[in-house]
Every structure is written in C-alpha cells, then in structure tokens.
Length: 101
Image (cartoon, rainbow, N blue to C red; front, top):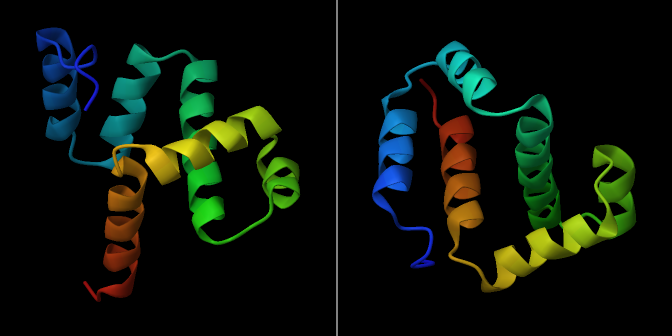
C-alpha cells in the first residue's frame, strides 16, 4: 500500500463508503463527492480492468470504453504490478454472480 495514501482523511472516506448499503446510496454519495467526469473516469478504469482480465485487446477496449491507450496501459500496469485491488474486486464480483441468492 502506498504510504502517502494512508491518511486519517482517506480512512474516514473509506469508512463512509463501507457504510453504503445499496446502489442508489452509492449514486447519491458519489454524485455529491465526485464530479461527473471523476466518476466516469473511475468507472472507465474498472471496465478497462474487467476487459483486460477477459483478454480483450487494447483496440477492442479503446473502441468499447473510449479509453486512451495510455489509460489502458496504466490499468494494465496496475493489474500486473499493483496492489491486487482490481483482481480482488473482480474475483468477488464473479463469485457473487455465480452464487445463487
């Protein structure tokens, strides 16, 4: 974990996010916290990570998401050399989709 990231303020933000219970609560909170562009950038990076793990090509990902090759490359670097956050979340989402409720 990046030591510059770990601050009391970031802890408070993450605690607030962990309290959210529904998608609608997420929309309400993130609409207040982020600009539309910030939220769209975050969601684009997540989609890029998902598609990279599906073995899609950079060209395919760029066409579908509108992400630049620089963004795709940065996400790919995080997938390969980062903190494994993307993979943890992608795995949990896949597991949840596979499990009957």
